[in-house]
Amino acid sequence: MVKHIILWNLKEEYNNALVKNEMKTALEGLMGVVDGLWKIQVEIDPLPTSNADVMLYSEFESVEALKNYAVNPDHVKVAETKVRPFTKTRTVMDFFE
Image 1 (cartoon, rainbow, N blue to C red):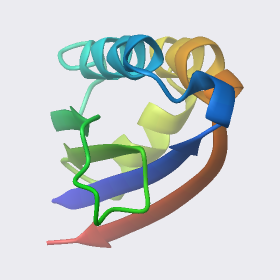
Image 2: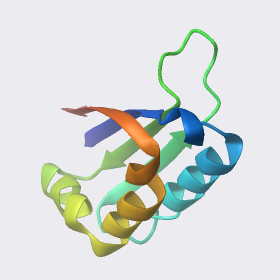
Image 3: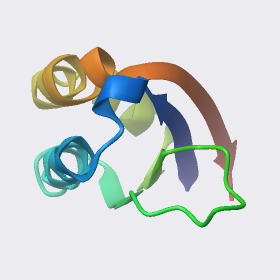
Image 4: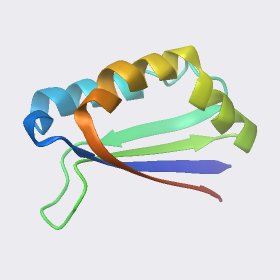
């Protein structure tokens, strides 16, 4: 299993509940749409000790499934319309479990 975690910081003008909820709904909506995606969870309500605004946690059956997710048209559409326009930084970690 491959785990894929992303932490985003939002642009100040977009750091609000509406944008965060739209990101969460769109990203979690990829479950069942992308082959090899076993789990996807988006957290939008960090504790004050956090230094990220939004977290994506996902699990894939293989590295190949993760690579396919990256170019999947449904994922690309979500990334281009619901994520990238609103984020200023992105940190990623992928690993095997």
